[in-house]
Length: 251
Image 1: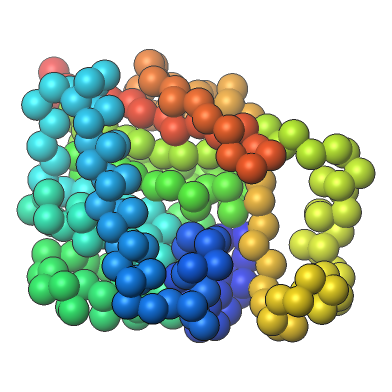
Image 2: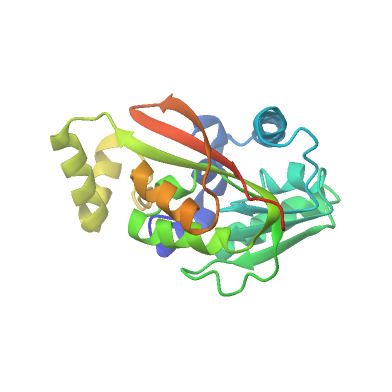
């Protein structure tokens, strides 16, 4: 979600690559085999997340109402729908939501609903016992993203669990990072980069941002979640963290 306009464009032009940036998932390469692999990776991810939650937070974890924030084309909504009574997919791009709905219909998923995102999540109602987001917040500038995390946590039910992923450090040299930020600010530089690298000329940017872990933990504390479990990893020149946490049961 670097900019809302960029993600609408990704959804229109190359939605599966926009979700998982592998050449196998380019629109021009999206064979039935590659498409099956795309959705299989989603099921494997959800299974691994549930296993980690049961190991560290709740041995009997069986959520009824779940959220996938930044749901894209529904890669994770589908496996969540098969494990939960209800799942809500949230995305900023109408083009992504339309593709997600089509994918769920093709898979016979009837317990998914959809919410168009904005900076205050004004269309989201009710409480949920599981909230998930992966490879999403890294595309949102922290000044927006921290507020969105706070909004999400405001809808977490007592005893509910969250699993949210972020980048917290970029290992690239400062000059490289500065040049990349210039490309975010000036669209003609992105067009030039596309031309030089052989990408589609009008391919939008896919911004990458790092978060301050202290600031994130403060947001969790403010939401009444004083303890978190961090799963740290390396990702192509970035240091990332999956933050797992459980809200206390109602008194």
